[in-house]
Every structure is written in C-alpha cells, then in structure tokens.
Length: 554
Image 1 (cartoon, rainbow, N blue to C red):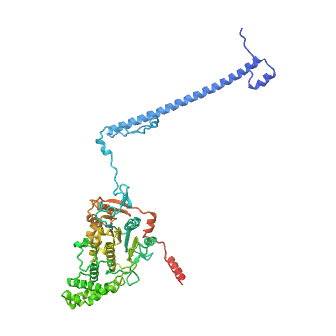
Image 2 (image 1 turned 135 degrees about the vertical axis):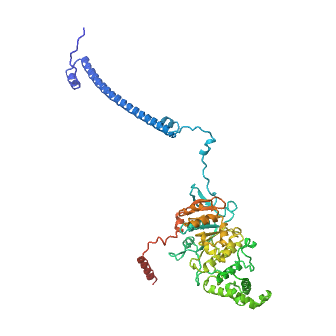
C-alpha cells in the first residue's frame, strides 16, 4: 500500500532544529536529498533561462550578419550592373579577408588573372633606371630623376667617358656655382691627395678678403694676396719657371699642343693690354729683341730679369744686337717707343707692385691647396685679367717641368676676365695642354653673353668635358647654353626652371641630366658666402663695437 509522506521538508534554516530533535537517520537523510534536489532544480532553471536568452541573441546576431551580407551582395550587384551599363571595366577586389588563406601564406585581397601572353605582357616589366654615372670618383649629389648618387671625377673618367678634363660652371648669381666649386672642386679633391690652385676673385666685406679665405684658413693655408701699390705679393712674367721662348708661335700652331705659353706670349699680352690694341710687326720685333737683351743683361748677376729690364732695353737697344738683325739702334728705338711709354705707365700705375720685380717667395706649389687672392684688384683696368693670366701661365709651366705628374685642378671664379682681349689667347693655349699636364681647368661664368663671340674662349668652353648649367633667368641665355653645348630639344626650358643648388649636368657625350648638389654640415659652414646679407647688425651695434676696439688698442 502506497502511503503519502506528509512530513514537512525542512529547509536549510531548519537543519539545526532537525538535529536537535535527533530524528532517525533515514528521515534526516531524506531531508538533505530534498534540499540538494531543490538546489539543482533551481540551478537548472537558471541555466535554461540563460540558454534561452543566448539563443535569442545568437539568432538576432545571425540575422544581422545575414542582413549585412545580403546588403553587400545587393550593393555589388548594383555596382556590376552600373559598370555593365556604362561599359566601364570592373574594379577587381576581394570583398573580405580570408584568414585561412592568409595563414597559408597567400595575400589578400587577390587580383583576378589576366588572359594574356608573356610576349604581350613584356611592357608591364618596366626597366629600372640606371645611375647616370659610374661608381668611381667623387660624390657630387643625386640625380633628380632617379635618386641615384652622382659620382664623377674628371681624372678617373678620362679616357672612358671624357676626352677633356676641363670643367665649366655657368649660371645666374646665387644659384650654387661657388658651393659646387668649393666642395666638389676643392675639398673633395683634397681627400684624394690632389693639388688644388684657386684664383679667388670675390671680395667679402665681413672678412676683408676673398671668399676662399675661411676655407683656406680652416685647412691651415695662408692665401697669396695681390694688391696694387705694394704690400702684397708680386709675380714676375720673366720668372725662369716660365719658359723663355723668344720666338714663340701663335696659340693655334702645332707647338701649342706641346708646350704652355711662355714669357714671350705673356710679355706680348701685357704690352697689348697697355696699348689697348695689337702690336704692329715693327713693334713686335722691338719687343722681342728687348726681351732677349733683358735676359742677357742679368747673366752672371745672380738675379732674374723682370719687366723693368725689358723697358730699359726698349729705351736703349743694344747696338750689336741691332747690327746682327741688320737694323740700326735708331730704328729699334723708334719702333719700341710706344710700347715702352705704355709699359712704363702701366707698371707705375695699373700694375704697380704686381709684376715689376722678382716673384715673391710665397708663390709656390708647396701644399695641396694654394689660394691666390686677387679680390683687392679693381674690376676695371688690365690688372685683374693680366694677373689671372700670369698665374695660369706660371702654373702651366711649373707643371710642365714636374717629373712625376700630380693631378691638379685650377679653379677661376668669374673667369670672363681671362677670356677677353689679348690674354684670351694665352688662356686658350694653356687649356689646350691640360691633358698633357694632368691639369683640370675649371671656369665659372654667369652668362654666355659675357664672352665675345670672336673670343677663343668659345672654343675653349665647347671642349670642356664636364659642364654644370645652373639656372638662367633670361630665356636668351638659356637658349645660348643649349646651342653652345648641343643639348637636346627642350633643354633651354629646363635650364630656366632649375632650382637653387640644382643644375643640368653634362658629362662628355652622355645625355644631360638634372643633378642636385649635396653638402655636408661642415661643407655648408665652409662654403657660406651669404653672411653679409644675413647680418643682423645695426648702426648702434657697429658703433659700440668700433669704440670698444679703439679703447682696447689705446
């Protein structure tokens, strides 16, 4: 018979009470089972409620993802329909990232394949631009088109890409010509143990000297200064280190390719500059005989002849020499009076203290760098071009006598002084011998229009193996450069648009390219020529500094 247990079930709070009444074990055990069952039932009910909530959330999330997927498919279908209607090629893409494929090493999104052949797709494999120069030489900068380094050296490139070691820099004022000359033409050349000779023309007011003076001082070199009236160095055109050829042929003769200009050409150039015209045949004869007489007059005296000895011979020709030439003293004296008068005026006025005596001891090629500071010579008059030309000739003859050739670079700022008048022939003669002397003549010009069309310098520029063309603000100047150096069509426009420190560089017969010149921080400090323009001084400050200096002197 089944009986229903009507015994009330104790809850957790009545456990102690049950124990106190000492109920039978079976009844007490039954109460514990009931309590545990109730707890399990309540836990299960909670889990069921949580599962119901989770299922609803998953269903909602699933429905949301499906809606988004349907939306994407509908948008893609709409885009494809629009592209088909407009005949526009379908943009390839992958709708979503594929993690499994990425894990295997595939890239996503991936492009669909193109139906083509290897021959048809050759155009897609574009060639990489090669560097415009070789890897041998000195760093100049970078190629503006490809970013490759530009490494070039006239000595290491000679015989391969170059047939002439001479260099010219052409461009407007302030475009970076001087910076390129000081870095690539001077400092970086010295690293290789080269000999560098600079004719410094630009005067800097803040340092009271030429612009190469700070660079020379930083390298422990004292510049050689020239100034009119004395107090500076002197260079003798009859210096024994300059060849004493007395019947020198013209600069276009065969000997021009074998020997540099000598004393005779220099003396003739100085005389023609004094007369401001060419010598007549009779005047030329008188000057040549005076030159011989001057050299003969100092034999056994222990000193070198100079231009004053030539002047004395013009005024008082040697009778025996005149007789040997079937001439009379009166004839030679008459022919040489005009040259004598003008030479006397010049050495006492325009060239006073410059060429009227023996060569100064500080004029020598003793170190790696030699700087001739001619910045104090006047722009007008014959002093500046004559001194530049004499230095050029003295250097060429010195190199001609050396036993072991040392690569040498001669840099001339504002070289238009040396390519006009009678001195142009001497300069042209010396530059034609550059290869035999291991000499690189480097000239800087502002414009081609600075050079007369009938000057020998035009041919000299055409023969330069390396050309740096900086910005030319005037269209006609840019066109003149393109025409002179036979540049490709459109080069004149490129030259007119160049930025500062950027040039059109042409090496030998290679195609020109745009080069960006780079400088290190040290080079920037040594090549800065804009200190005067960037000065923050005021009149009051200058006055105070001047008074302080006067007090210190007192």
